[in-house]
Image (cartoon, rainbow, N blue to C red; front, side, top):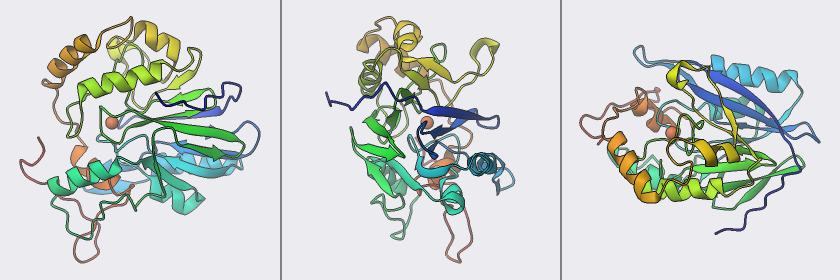
Length: 295
Ligand SMILES: [Fe+2]
């Protein structure tokens, strides 16, 4: 396994912003020793029925960065989300910073370039992003180091980001009572997801773990912070030493019963472009709805 540069002695300040429309949690992660910060998994608001986009959630993040006098260095996408749209380019325009995602974005762009029958103007080389992370790649946010762990399974480009003693799990793990994300999207794989989760669970037990989505199972309050040790012990899908075979059987049966996320059609088209809206031939922002193309 890759030798990851774990540094438990750095404790970033983590501010969470819950988006009620999509149950997404976005984060501002601040270096305790400087004014530098990163944003993880931002959200652009969409009224899909009306074909209207707005930026209330992103504006809240931007206002916080500005009010606190922070310097935004990174805008990180843990993966190509299928249930919400990223606001990365909107935030970058206002605050700067580099947009980064896993290098397997090329696989996602190739797969969905076909699904959405994109023309040659849609580059499938990841060039819409400023940085493509490989497994184990590290980067700086002021004086603190972050690094990426490749965690394919939910999607090919999934990465978990570790910044000091804080882990940003994306969809690789949910809260212990929420389990794990589905593995049946194109390029997803339940066995691969299990292996990826084991990599994350091998991090130090007292690392803080922040998740990307929470739905408050059983009516509990929305939550987003746990620890690696808690996930190891009690995650309902993988905790307590569940085997790979058990996980694959459970995940496959469960995924067969799930319907598509409400926003998958707009989300993929926008997020595979790093959060930019696609355009029609006349330069107008426009989305496609391919018929019977998503399996
Ligand atoms: Fe996701």
